[in-house]
Image (cartoon, rainbow, N blue to C red; front, side):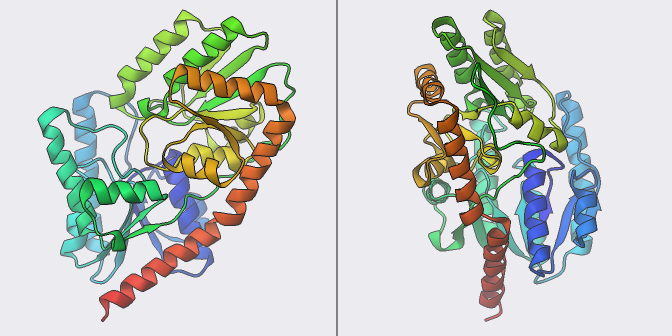
Length: 386
């Protein structure tokens, strides 16, 4: 298993999957940055870990970002060449941004390894390079897809995206759903409904539509008798999202009542307490074909979701009564969904959260995900040995 991401939901996903594979006696080693958030927990579980150089992801200037990423690429590439062997399955999770991430795929191909790639985001949330240079980024991503013997996505929309956008063979694409993320300290009982508390959680990206949630809450607090509170908890995903977040903060300054911002990384031990104080999680995502780790977190901890029908969110809303659909990705659409949640009250929201938790645990457990991943590995090696 190969990942370049040291923290946040990406690291949690890799940790849960590797731990699940270890528990079903799969010989797996994790190749990760030395500052991987769950390194000690994985080592304690018996997983083999190759910790390479640290990868810093804090916001900084352009030159500093290039320098630290080049250093990480060089040291990690050398380590990958040393430890991989012909016939190894190298399963990529969250590589560094393309075109640079292609280096790892090329090295695995040169060592005659079998590549599996989980395409968490079949198309990037936001392209790294502008204008005519974007073709380089897109072509290197497509080349990585073609070098991969198997591709994993989390929902059918993502599968169709890979087929239509990149012309890939449908037979090499498998759907394995995202798993649950439980949090300690989160009560299954919701707070009293004297005020309504809504949470927007995770890395701040324009595709998450946070600006719509801000404006919807501001509108409702101007017109409604019940106070609606919005907590925005997380930090900017990367430098490309800084301008968007500045626009969001300008919107908040126009009418800050009821809006709380926790602009920082929320440690895992604090996530449960944060969820505990909120009635629901808002996900007004825009153009989106991926799976939402935040939705999995919310439902795993019995919090209903208010979500647009895009990407994996559409499948969740269709499969179980886990939340309220935001019918249009607009201020009106978000405000209408919030109003429905307030009118439905605590009992309705608790029922939605419980239904979401039951659905995830019964259909998307990490044991089931690990077993399906192992089956894919077995099928791949059997095919290659013929």
